[in-house]
Image (cartoon, rainbow, N blue to C red; front, top):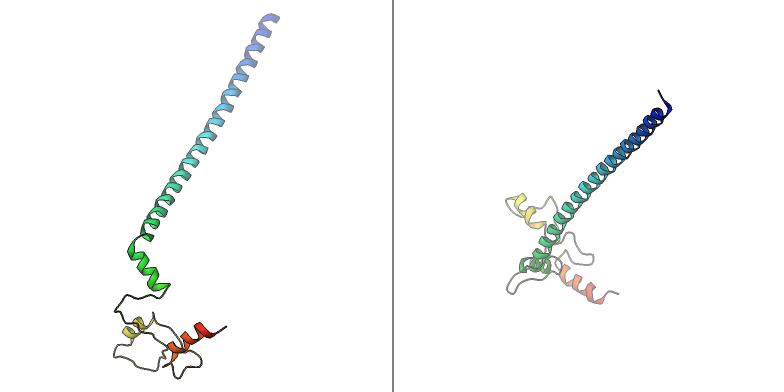
Length: 136
């Protein structure tokens, strides 16, 4: 084989090798970019869902029902004309009604335990008010 043909063949082989390497490299970069794009799209979807949940929570927290719930539970407020019952203690050997489980489910929302310094729990609310305003 003449020398000119060998040089031409080697040149073509090197050029084709470079083109092939470039195409393979670009293909890998394209696959990595596609994976990164899919990950970002999944994250955007997740953040949009979170945004929707937060918007729903904000909408709920602006309703009168939520405001009333917070006023009752956190601020211990009542509506005019309502009566407040305070539970000051309970022991298992005492029987308060014929249906013990019904009483327990009612008493769960009450104040548990006696207040020190009260006479058998009867004066507990008054003592609690006294401690609130006059204890330093």
